[in-house]
Length: 403
Ligand SMILES: [Zn+2]
Image: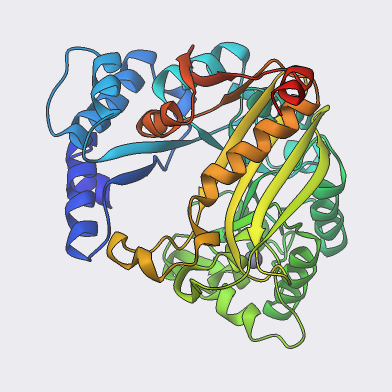
């Protein structure tokens, strides 16, 4: 709808969005740009470069000759693009595509996975198979991207048991391990081939009760290092003919279930419940993913119900920081109300990651930084190298001798 209102002009879309966020009282100096819709990788290279350049120009509020120039300007702009997300299909992710995404400034990729089962994917005419999903996840993580999976329970060929097993698998099997998750339950639309199957009673949507039961089970499997972005569709419910996907406030419905608290990142972020004097603890969780090791660092309260800051470090051939995020930062004027322990949490986590990488014997550490966050890392001793911010690490021996 926003694209149509702005005649599909990327610059107009960014400008209008910034204006409305500003009008709502939001801070617009750091922008997390999320490009939604379609299979990004399918568009011609020239179009993609033009599109992203226009977005940077809008943030810079001036035009540039090249994309690179627009990005350079954005490093010190009033509105900095600190991250870019695109959506694509797993079979489009190749080494070449990954490099191009980096040139554009992309930091997060949402993959249309839907199911991890070959038979379900085939039955639903998906172009990506299980191997494509595994390969894409690995290539993206190796390059430092954050990976979001779009999953679709209730697809033809699956059932309650199989769906439950699937969500268990994506967090138990190191080949998957998404950082973020969007769950869109299958819905019957009049225009879709599924409509005919449903009419002929060859496809049966879950009942509301079944779906709620399944989602609660899914939420129990979700680890501390994953963020559930979405639980419901973003299409109007009047276009859905059948199925429990009609429930539009699923998150609220689930919250009302007794004796159950979701421990995903989104449900722990401090946001409105920021307590400036709360005592914080540094947590470290390690898990295997796509042949490497992921180290998830976080500053949280003792019971891990309020998350203040997080960092994702991946180690395999390189040590690469895939994400640094601090929540609930107060308005600069209120900074005096914050206990010293709460100051510079992101910076403290970066230092901790450097310490871990040094101990593991790495000579340098890299960050997949959004263009607008490069200055932040420069202040921490990082320099731009092939679209990444990189810092040399001193060996553990020389670090010891300095002490
Ligand atoms: Zn949650």
